[in-house]
Amino acid sequence: MAPGAPTLTPRSPSATPSGTPTPSSTPTPSPARTDRPGASRATNLMPVIQHGPRGPQRIALTFDADLTASMRRRLQAGTVKSYYNDQLIAELRALRVPATLFLTGLWMEQYPDRTRELAKDPLFELGTHTYDHRAFTKHCYTLGTVPRAEMLTDVRRAVVQLDRLVPNATRWFRFPGGCYDGTALHELAPAGLTAVGLDVPGADGFAKSPDPIVKQVLSNARDGSIVVLHMHGGDNAPYTDEAIGPIVRGLRARGYELVTVTELMRGR
Image (tube, rainbow, N blue to C red; front, top):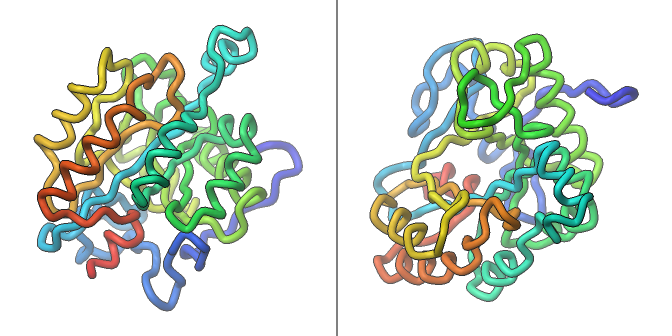
């Protein structure tokens, strides 16, 4: 945690303009709960959801805003113009697509005004994606690894950053690369967060065109799916904005309703 940052008290999500549940309506899944679709079943662990109810024709599109130390150096050097894909957000708004956005602490530090703007849009809800996108297991793609002793501090640091910009933010969280194990879930249990998994990876990271992204999502999405894409654009995810239109139209043509993670887990 950054010097002087407040200590977090675990809490259930509070009501926000983006439709986050109140504690009285839909609490964050407890680690002891076993009746939520796709949820982890062990006690004393951070709870994990991999998907929503498989019955209703509802799908949650989610977008990660990664920003690592090396990405920030490229940004500062002018090698990359921006790690905010404003065209993607414009497409989501034009198509009226609800989405859940997972932001790293570094990304929020780089784009505080954008974070506040996204939080005010009723289409979107915001969650966290660690502080600097290091992994919580070894050998997770090419990501660095957060030492066990620093795991809770790293995650809380991002939550504090989000809370400073967005009062009453959600308690949804996503692991970088989708990589975690029992050690990580144990260390992060005190954070009071619920991890949102990767039911359908969108394969937009370093894609060479929008076509494989569209094919990947439309070929694998089904009732209750949580689709994982990226909203930072730049050199890491350059074609997500071009793929999102065909994805949305394809899913809606099949009768799917697109919702936030919170709405998906309400199971309506």
